Image (cartoon, rainbow, N blue to C red; front, top):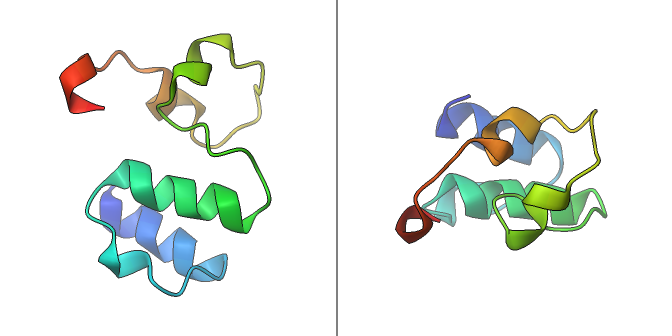
Length: 69
């Protein structure tokens, strides 16, 4: 999923300032916050995640160098 697609999802979820965020992580966190969910995307919590229906799961659990998080 591209950053532009994620920003479109953010706007659909009521995030009015989605275009001010510079990273995908920030946009997903804004979406999670708007939905009343924990802001867990690419956080340290991700390795213990049990949410199998999460739409961000594949991207979140992908191995990423620590300096890029």
